[in-house]
Image 1 (cartoon, one colour):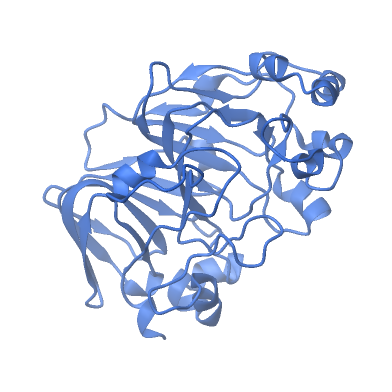
Image 2 (cartoon, helix red, strand yellow; image 1 turned 90 degrees about the vertical axis):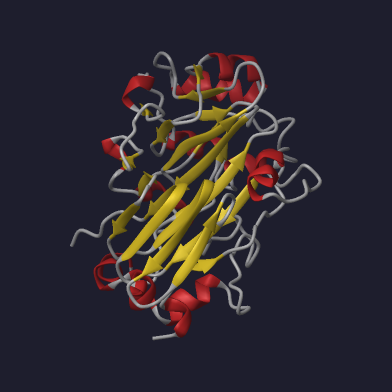
Length: 340
């Protein structure tokens, strides 16, 4: 077992340049200077690259190795034997800090089966958003169609790039910190300006973007080379009741709160931790995002980490059981529990 797989590792920011604006909320959380405005995503403990790129998006550990390479070299230590039996050397998780400095385009993501057929990937891209901050007068998200829509109508919208029709067909939901939104594969969605989230997702970068004009340089970037006719086959055109995918957690006072709706459990897990004085955590590969306060993370095999607002950590399975203590708020993100 490598030494790095025995204790928590503090990670620097990892913000690959994106096509949309944002990043000031990430800078404020981390206590860092704001960059050029096109760093709206911080890929935390990432073993995933931007679509079609060999390295951009990967997390580099303090010892200079890519996290991806470290996990591949010792997957049982990093991920645990049960996880490896199901997911091999994949973490099965990507965590991002996402700060929408402008409204994101209407888009959706493929399922596992669709991604396997068209992108040669074991994973599609189901995701969830944990709202940790908002700005502006009316922060909103847009999850799923309000009413059923035909595929033919969607094709017309895409052909005409009718942004008003696409956005207008979606649910429009105001959000505040503590709200969480589950976005299953296929569900059309957008995030409004001023919404800052911790995002959990399957470890891919497959976004099928219906509203590509004014966001992407060419339609090929929207359909990822498979054509919109094929891409729309993966779109959920049914009506979505937002109440089934949104959970409100701001008023929950327990030291440990399960943040996500039950349907998300096969894809990822997330808890809000407010230890005061202490909480015991089971051994697991985990990604920690410290939202406020100060605390300490002590692990079974001697690792100890000081937690402060804006810190992000990756915790290997081999670190063992852990205890988090102090006056702090931490989001603990984990892969799905391996079921054989």
